[in-house]
Image (cartoon, rainbow, N blue to C red; front, side, top):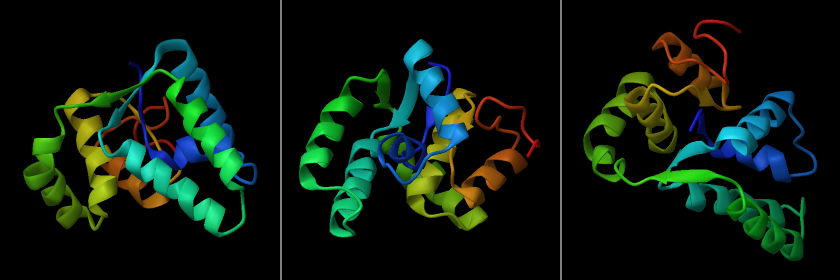
Length: 142
Protein backbone atom coordinates (compact mmCIF):
# COMPACT_ATOMS: atom_id res chain seq x y z
CA UNK A 1 0.00 0.00 0.00
CA UNK A 2 1.37 3.36 -1.00
CA UNK A 3 -1.29 5.90 -0.07
CA UNK A 4 -4.45 6.53 1.95
CA UNK A 5 -7.29 7.40 -0.43
CA UNK A 6 -10.26 9.45 0.71
CA UNK A 7 -13.68 9.25 -0.86
CA UNK A 8 -13.37 12.63 -2.60
CA UNK A 9 -10.58 11.21 -4.73
CA UNK A 10 -12.38 7.93 -5.42
CA UNK A 11 -15.57 9.74 -6.40
CA UNK A 12 -13.59 11.85 -8.87
CA UNK A 13 -12.52 8.63 -10.59
CA UNK A 14 -16.12 7.78 -11.42
CA UNK A 15 -18.23 10.94 -11.52
CA UNK A 16 -18.08 12.26 -15.08
CA UNK A 17 -18.13 15.93 -14.02
CA UNK A 18 -15.33 15.65 -11.45
CA UNK A 19 -12.14 15.10 -13.40
CA UNK A 20 -8.94 15.78 -11.48
CA UNK A 21 -5.25 15.38 -12.27
CA UNK A 22 -4.61 14.59 -8.62
CA UNK A 23 -7.28 11.87 -8.68
CA UNK A 24 -5.84 10.44 -11.90
CA UNK A 25 -2.38 10.26 -10.31
CA UNK A 26 -3.83 8.56 -7.24
CA UNK A 27 -5.60 6.03 -9.46
CA UNK A 28 -2.26 5.22 -11.10
CA UNK A 29 -0.83 4.55 -7.62
CA UNK A 30 -3.79 2.36 -6.69
CA UNK A 31 -3.57 0.27 -9.84
CA UNK A 32 0.18 -0.13 -9.42
CA UNK A 33 0.57 -0.72 -5.69
CA UNK A 34 -2.83 -0.52 -3.99
CA UNK A 35 -4.09 1.85 -1.34
CA UNK A 36 -5.42 1.84 2.18
CA UNK A 37 -8.86 3.15 3.11
CA UNK A 38 -10.66 3.31 6.46
CA UNK A 39 -13.47 0.87 7.11
CA UNK A 40 -16.05 3.64 6.64
CA UNK A 41 -14.85 4.25 3.08
CA UNK A 42 -17.46 2.07 1.37
CA UNK A 43 -20.29 3.82 3.21
CA UNK A 44 -18.97 7.30 2.46
CA UNK A 45 -18.22 6.44 -1.17
CA UNK A 46 -21.63 4.82 -1.56
CA UNK A 47 -23.34 7.85 -0.06
CA UNK A 48 -21.55 10.06 -2.57
CA UNK A 49 -23.01 7.95 -5.37
CA UNK A 50 -26.49 7.98 -3.77
CA UNK A 51 -26.34 11.77 -3.67
CA UNK A 52 -25.08 11.90 -7.27
CA UNK A 53 -28.15 9.94 -8.40
CA UNK A 54 -30.46 12.20 -6.40
CA UNK A 55 -28.86 15.26 -7.97
CA UNK A 56 -29.20 13.63 -11.40
CA UNK A 57 -25.46 13.66 -12.01
CA UNK A 58 -25.56 9.90 -12.75
CA UNK A 59 -28.30 7.31 -13.04
CA UNK A 60 -28.86 4.25 -10.85
CA UNK A 61 -27.52 1.90 -13.55
CA UNK A 62 -24.22 3.80 -13.64
CA UNK A 63 -24.13 3.70 -9.83
CA UNK A 64 -24.47 -0.11 -9.83
CA UNK A 65 -21.67 -0.38 -12.39
CA UNK A 66 -19.52 1.92 -10.28
CA UNK A 67 -20.04 -0.21 -7.17
CA UNK A 68 -18.73 -3.18 -9.16
CA UNK A 69 -15.80 -1.26 -10.62
CA UNK A 70 -14.61 0.11 -7.27
CA UNK A 71 -14.44 -3.42 -5.84
CA UNK A 72 -12.05 -4.38 -8.65
CA UNK A 73 -9.46 -1.86 -7.41
CA UNK A 74 -6.83 -2.80 -4.85
CA UNK A 75 -8.31 -0.77 -1.98
CA UNK A 76 -7.60 -2.45 1.33
CA UNK A 77 -9.88 -1.55 4.23
CA UNK A 78 -8.16 -0.81 7.54
CA UNK A 79 -9.76 -3.07 10.10
CA UNK A 80 -7.79 -1.67 13.05
CA UNK A 81 -9.11 1.88 12.88
CA UNK A 82 -12.63 1.30 14.18
CA UNK A 83 -11.58 1.41 17.81
CA UNK A 84 -9.64 4.60 17.20
CA UNK A 85 -12.74 6.57 16.22
CA UNK A 86 -13.71 7.01 19.86
CA UNK A 87 -10.36 8.41 20.89
CA UNK A 88 -7.79 9.54 18.34
CA UNK A 89 -10.14 10.46 15.48
CA UNK A 90 -12.56 12.42 17.66
CA UNK A 91 -9.65 14.28 19.23
CA UNK A 92 -8.27 15.11 15.78
CA UNK A 93 -11.71 16.30 14.63
CA UNK A 94 -12.08 18.56 17.66
CA UNK A 95 -8.54 19.89 17.56
CA UNK A 96 -8.53 20.71 13.84
CA UNK A 97 -12.18 21.54 13.15
CA UNK A 98 -12.70 18.53 10.88
CA UNK A 99 -15.68 16.27 10.45
CA UNK A 100 -15.23 12.92 12.12
CA UNK A 101 -15.26 11.33 8.66
CA UNK A 102 -12.26 13.40 7.58
CA UNK A 103 -10.50 12.85 10.91
CA UNK A 104 -10.68 9.07 10.32
CA UNK A 105 -8.66 9.48 7.10
CA UNK A 106 -6.22 11.75 8.91
CA UNK A 107 -5.79 9.29 11.78
CA UNK A 108 -5.13 6.45 9.32
CA UNK A 109 -2.46 8.46 7.47
CA UNK A 110 -0.84 9.47 10.76
CA UNK A 111 -0.85 5.93 12.13
CA UNK A 112 0.52 4.28 8.99
CA UNK A 113 2.87 7.03 7.84
CA UNK A 114 1.36 6.84 4.35
CA UNK A 115 0.64 9.93 2.23
CA UNK A 116 -2.96 11.09 2.03
CA UNK A 117 -4.72 11.63 -1.31
CA UNK A 118 -7.63 14.01 -0.84
CA UNK A 119 -9.40 16.71 -2.81
CA UNK A 120 -10.74 18.20 0.43
CA UNK A 121 -8.85 21.47 0.96
CA UNK A 122 -9.36 21.65 4.73
CA UNK A 123 -8.30 18.05 5.30
CA UNK A 124 -5.28 18.48 3.03
CA UNK A 125 -4.18 21.62 4.87
CA UNK A 126 -4.42 19.97 8.28
CA UNK A 127 -2.57 16.90 6.99
CA UNK A 128 0.19 19.07 5.56
CA UNK A 129 0.42 21.06 8.81
CA UNK A 130 0.89 17.76 10.66
CA UNK A 131 3.69 16.67 8.33
CA UNK A 132 1.71 14.13 6.33
CA UNK A 133 2.76 13.85 2.71
CA UNK A 134 -0.04 14.77 0.37
CA UNK A 135 -0.91 12.91 -2.77
CA UNK A 136 2.59 11.54 -3.06
CA UNK A 137 4.20 14.95 -2.50
CA UNK A 138 6.22 16.10 0.46
CA UNK A 139 4.23 17.72 3.23
CA UNK A 140 4.02 21.48 3.17
CA UNK A 141 4.05 21.76 -0.63
CA UNK A 142 1.02 23.18 -2.47
